Length: 301
Image (cartoon, rainbow, N blue to C red; front, side, top):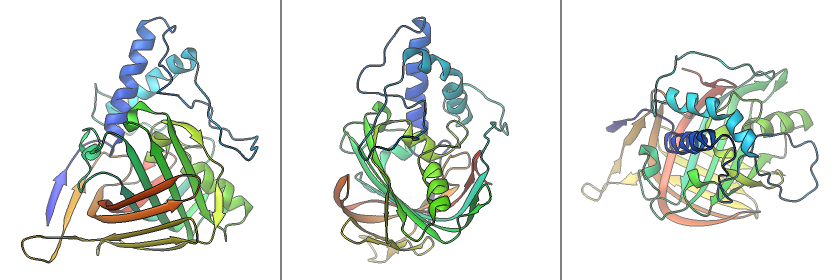
């Protein structure tokens, strides 16, 4: 087995560095600078009014300056820039925890350059991530045995923003479970930058309405196997990488001791097609299998 050790969040270290640098430029300009239309900050994550259409909100320069310290601090915590005391928890009213498995498949080649802070294989990003919650809660609401998926698309690099995102939650979830899980997957009720859900959502200019549908999902992290079926919407499959030399499955994993998504992730091959609010179609590309164990303050170690 080949193990690669990294510090920082997958994609998150690159994203947060870019975010911090942009914030610093705005701050240096006295809060009058604009980031431009290609990067739209989502400062207010509330979705109180849901009108059945895609919505995005551009952050004001004052909003951006207001989160400069937060973004810079989180980038430093990931080991990207500067220094930051570890173990500091942010105050979040809602308390939640999820533990289960996750499979992700993106457009990049095997290994995914974003894992190491490099630019994506093709200059833009498309991704599916999905998971099964073995046990969890959102405040007093049980989230155990729920399945979920998130579809994402960016016209350029993730850090440049202007992305589109859509969440799908298993239809068996009741109203309380739906609301709690939706908040987690969209990075709400979360300390700034603490999870990959928060980081990804901060790069979105459009968040499509959440869908509720039957989800058939199985993930075996150790065997690098995954199967996702959301009838008429999404189909995805993860398999091991086959060595061209031996013809046998090759086991390769990435170790991110300080990451905001996982500690270890098994590498594999993925195929995905989606025809929901976001359409995806990629074959034999980057696949990732990992244990997901986190709460409102980040990965639980």
